Each structure stands twice: as C-alpha cells, then as structure tokens.
Image 1 (tube, rainbow, N blue to C red):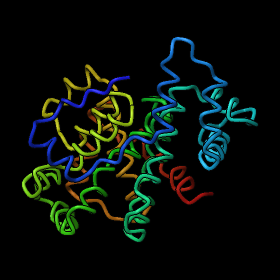
Image 2: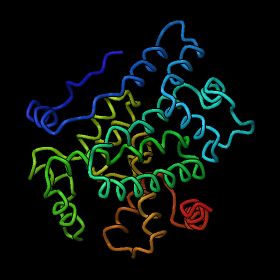
Image 3: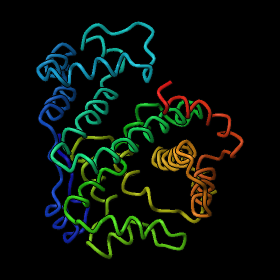
Image 4: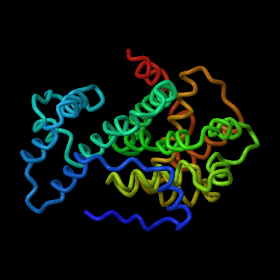
Length: 286
C-alpha cells in the first residue's frame, strides 16, 4: 500500500520532518500489507501479531474486554481477529502501538496526556454506540489519535504549554492558529500526518486535521453528514462530558463547542444528559 504524503504545503512538510513523526511500527506495516493481499490468510495475520508477545497479549485482553462485549471470549489471536474484524483490528493495533511510539518522552507529562486521552476515547466510543453515530472502534481510534500531535510539539518546543494556556482564554483564537503563528505547524496537521502514515482510515485522518475547524453553515453540514463531521462532533461531546466527570465547570466557549456538536449530529442536550451517569461509572472503572 502506498501512502500519499503530498497533501501538505512544502514548508509545512519540512517543519513536520523537523519535529519528527514516529515511523509506522513494522508490525503494523506487515499487518496492513498482509491484509491487503489478494489471498489474505487469517492464520498468517495472527502469526504476525503473535511474534510480538506483549502486543499479542494486549490485543487478546482488549478484544475480550467489555469495550467489545464479545459473547464468547476469544482464546487465541486468531479468534480475536475473527471476532473484531481485520479493519477494526488494524485500528486497535495502531492505538496500542501509539503509547509505545512515545515511550521515550517525559513520563510525568505523558501520564497526564494518556490519562485524559484514554478517558476521552472511552467516552467517544460510548457516545458513538449509544447515539448510533458510528461504531465504537472508529470513535475510539479517532479520539486516541486526535491530539497525538500535541506530544510532538511538547517535545520539540518547551514553551508549548504557554500556547495551550493562552488558548484556554474565552476570547482566544483556536490553539491550532496560535501554534501555526508560533511554530509554523499545528498539532492537528501533525496528528493527521501520523494517522495517514500509520494506515488509519482516511475519514479519521481528515477528522484529526479538521477537528478545530468550525463550519459556519452547520445546518448544511448536518444535512450531508459524513463520517468526518460525526467523529469531530463525538470528540467535542466526549471532551464536554469528560469535563463534567472531572467536575470542571462549563464556560461560554465550551457551550459554543457543545452547540456546534449538537448541530452537526442533529441532536439536543436532552439526548445526551441521561448518558452522563453511565459515562461517570465507565471512567471510574466501576
């Protein structure tokens, strides 16, 4: 499979190379090459994963978790792949490998990042299922990768925390605008580039690229709703509900974000309010 990376302006591509995108893990490359063969063999695919003992154990554990809700627990990698499907398995493996790709970064800073990202991912997956918007795996993968460009900027630019704090102001520009002005690149472009290089579905990389964009005509967007807009909206609602779980008060800015998501999905606040108790229990590990 050939990945098209010629979608960015030359200056942006140069800066991205300077920041450094983690290369696609070899196990994921091998997996995708095998999956796209004319004679794909589930046994061969299972063998590829089984060669990485830690990955195999995590794939099996994840497939058997409440997240997927399999009626019959998988007893082997072969059964796990068959149960979740190869496309879902590719997204699952990419998500599992993401933490490994950032393992050399500041563990204290990354602990907070991963804790937030994983909880928002679980919330997005739950919302995707309950609202009938998209399958849980797609929503979860998008949420995991959505802000993965942020650690790359954190690593390259020690002052990135100042940009984030500035963006939290009610009247501030989107954080991506502030990043572009300061560094010539933003975390959304970085994350989309990584997602593309890691073989994630196009709609996920597009949603990552656009997740800070706001269409003015939301009614028109809702009339032609596509997966990209659905994922962006789910991410916004997951952020809002995660904030409620943490006890963080709402603000005018987040109310605007929430209304934007409601318009994209053509739903009302009353549609998601009953879901908050379940989300709190999920995030608390109950």
